[in-house]
Length: 196
Image (cartoon, rainbow, N blue to C red; front, side, top):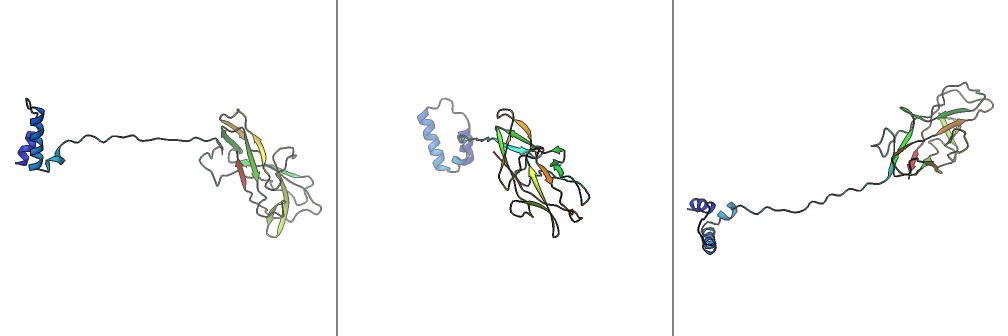
């Protein structure tokens, strides 16, 4: 009987008055409660909220997806005799040349360079076992603006706040000493932090 009523309810009721149609429907649902689930239901609708927040910032060019563990390049002083007569200098280089910052919405960035893993106070030192070579880092090729301790240096970003690239110069210098340094391979690791 319920199957027959379902077919009747699914068919258009031509000529049936609204009260009669309502009464027939109510009676059918009372006799066969399962018909209620079988009737087409009104769709459920609503709104999905979508949001995004875009902030200004900088990344090392070529490593835009990295926020930590960034490769700021290598400062390689090269190979020299122990008794080198003039200061040794070097510039930090990445895999494709000078390290560069890619910035958007930033007019200046602050660059802080740590003292390294073998420092004595604020004096950075390359190490080889028990031997040390003191060295200094600078923000300019004239060696006039040293990175003192962890005090930051300001790097101006061109473009007035639009998307722009700027060099991130880090220069190193080793002074010669009387008697030279013990032969060996010396190294240090220095943390670099860029903020804006």
